[in-house]
Structures are given as C-alpha cells and as structure tokens.
Length: 436
Image (cartoon, rainbow, N blue to C red; front, side):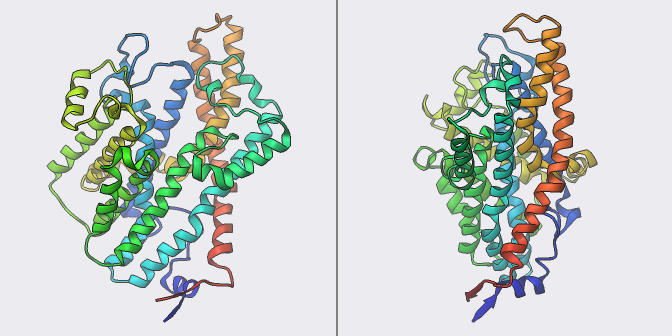
C-alpha cells in the first residue's frame, strides 16, 4: 500500500496551522504548558543575569557564606540547569501531543504522519533560527558592538563570541557550526549559549524513534520507559548527551498519560511536585556545596554515587531530568496550578520562549554591557567591584530589550522560517510516499 503523506496530512487536518504553537490541538487542555515554558525561560534569563556579577553558584559558595538565593527552593529562582531540563521535558510533551491524540483515537496513519512530519522538519526548524542569530552575532562582533563588554564582570565577558581569525573564517565557522558542528559537538563559536540545542535535536529524534517503535498501539508506551530507563540508569556509560536527551523522551511519556487522561489522587500529585522541586534544589554537580550537605551526602549514599559520579555533568542531567518529569507529571493532576500557569504574562512568554532564548545573550552582551559600563564609570566604581545601581539599570534595560527583541524575532523571523520549512518540506508538490 502506498501512502501519500501530504494528501493524508491535509485530509487529517494536520497541515492547517500557520504558526508553531504547542496548543493548536487543544488550547484549553495544555495551555499551561506555554506558561510553564515561559516561567522556565525567565528563570534561565535570571540565571544568566546573576552570572554577570556573582561568581558563586546558587548551589555552592566560593566565599564560605550561605546567601539568601542559595536557600532551598529560593535558589530555584535563578536555577538555570533545572530550568533547561524542564524545557527538554516540555519539548517532548509538545512534540508528542498530537501523535498521542491520534493514537488514543485509533488513527494510526495520522499518528505516523505526525511523526514523519516531525522527522522532516525538526532539524530545519531549529537550524535556521540558529543560523540567523549566529550570523547576526558575527556581524555585531565585526562591528565591534561586543567591545562594550570589555572590563565588564562575569558572564558579560566569559561567554562572548570571539573571532576565529578573519572574516571568512568567522563566516565559515558560523555556517558550519549552525549546519553541522552544533548538532554533533554542541559548539557554535558565534553564539556560545546554543549548546543545549544539540540535546533538544538529538532528543527529538530519539523521541520520534520511540514512537515509531511503539507502533501506534493504544497501550502505554512501554518502549519509552525501556529506552529512557536504559539511558537514564547507565549514566556514566551512556554519557552526558544521551542522558541529557532522555528528558525529551520523558516528556513523551507525560504526553501519553495526559491524552489518556490518567488520573491519580491530588495528594500524590502534591507529593510528586514537592519531590521534584526538592530534587531540583539539590546541589547536584557542585563539589563545594555548603547548605544541607549532610542531606545531599545521605542521598548520594542511598543512590550509590561515588565522589566523581555525584558531581559530574551526566549525574546532574540525570537528576534534573527526573525532577522536571516529576514536576510536569504532577501539574497534569493539579488544576489550580494549571490555572496559574495559564496567566497571560506567562502565556505570552511561553509563545516567544525560543526567541527569548536566542536573543537574550546578544542583548546582554550589547545593551546590558553598555548600560552597566556607562553607569558604573559615571559612579567611579573601583575595578573588580559590583556597582549595584549599574547592575539594576542593566537588569531593567536587558529584560525590556530582550522582551521586545523576542517579540520581533518571533513575528518576523521565527514564524516566517517555520512557514518556509513547512511549505518547502511538507506542502511541496513532490510529496513523500511510503510503503505500509
């Protein structure tokens, strides 16, 4: 039997979408996903702002003091690592939702088409915006716009792109990094914050593979559990990347149970939520942790982690993925929390979360650095000290410009590129055909 993908997708109503939104199938059912994604995005932005001025981690302290932001649960405000893993799990949920709905309704062909469409478009939908922001970053670097960061503290100089030699070399590394190297090595010299996109892409294709192995059956996706468990519980054997990517697979499991309307008692959901947030508060990956160290050491003994394992990146990714999974799965059973996450300001951020992730480092390196440098110089701040008025002004300017730039990016770059990819790969006259 020959199946024409484009014709079947049109008849199934899969192609009638004008923009890349997660809630196109049932806005009222998973609207909170946008809000949670927006909240995680702001946490990442705040974590980068903190890194601009304070070298100590929210997990550990280099000056021997316990700061307020390092207290349990409070530290989640600036906990960038758990927030990134939250985005991985939510990405898996969003990518799997339509497929899970078709499977639940018995539409195996439509489910297969959703998977194949994702396989077609996923790389290009991530790569083209990454190439655009990298090209802009290269241009700003050659226009010396990043020079305002010279002498600025922390993240403003540590993560700033550097020239690879000459203009042609920079252009080559920019294009090569966006097309190939970033998805293999996680390296993009023109925009150093794009490292996690490798895990998102690889995790997406692992997720698609799991759904294909699942075969469109109505039973729970046990293949998801087997594959994710194999990746998660072989932390050191699988390596950091595969463990990191497994968060996307866990998101697919959440999608299945959300569509299947799996119910469990709200008290269990509350326990799961608190457990997930507590796990995200653990000082994983920080050998100099100073708060609740006895609790962390006890947990590591129970988990049979040695001194190396409990501080390496793979272990960090493993436990933060589990924490994100617990939080997201628990929220599916908590309507009041879903209502809060459906707030307009969180929804608005969730819609442009990818754009905010791409543009905010560039804004920090330019507008933020310029604001801080000018104000700190006018106040004659001694070299090496943090100027609090300048930091406050930089925060306000960076947040405002990042928000505006993300809106512009989403409307004039992200959506047009999405429509271009859809028209090129999915709506093209030469449709895919497969044997069933």
